[in-house]
Image 1 (cartoon, rainbow over the protein chains, first blue to last red):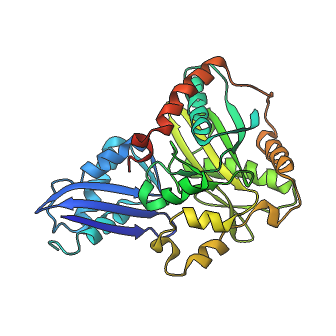
Image 2: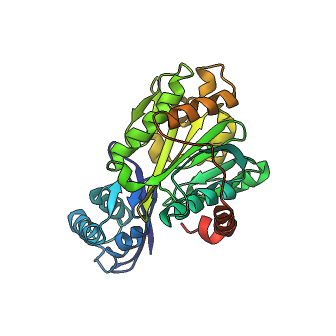
Image 3: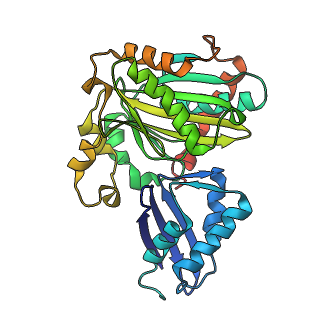
Length: 97
Length: 242
């Protein structure tokens, strides 16, 4: 299955996500007009959500993203883990939770 | 200080990256440059989806190039003769944190606009507004200890073309319609009678004020490396990667 979602972070940028999923999240692509330093770290953020159940809540997703950002020394500008998680939850709105 | 010079989208992006690499390797000093785009082009941010941001068929019909930048941020229409781009390429250690460095460098652009009697105002994260409307947007990357910030300054708006090639997202418009997006943008020509050459001169003065600088030219090494990087920036594998 394929789902799409988006979230406009207050005072920030637009985050769009495309999520491939079955019973778990199989792949996530995060796009938008935000900044992330270093840029290559986007892959680590996307991978951090893989394997989570489609019913996972926004808080759990945001925590996984936060951990990946910390591990990679990533700096987000104009987006937040919570904003990405909200967009992913939106993409999964017909699945799980 | 290099430019103003006019090149196509792929060379413009390749030279920014080549200059950053050459500085990281200690082969050249910091570079400030001004450049124009011929033919006109759309640049999209590192993380943007090509298909979602740009009407490529329309660009093709109008002879407008499309290129993905090495920096994040949003899509920009670099109209031929309607826009100027600047780059600042310097050691990261000379600058404060990300938001503050946008404020600092955008302040140099604001200073340049002030020379034309235009009162610009920095709006975090990365914009300059005139009377509440956007006249300039910038984007920054930091790699290998080098800060590279480039940004666009709108000279003359062709809103019809701009909004026919850029797919302005429904979420971005927040349901207020395309007119709302158009109303949020302005250009130098709406506030000044300055020519494009006079705008370039004012921006050069603003960007270099208080700094030791010399007029410069590309080194052979930078040009050779840029020629290689042009292939990346032309490649659909790069431009269509998201």
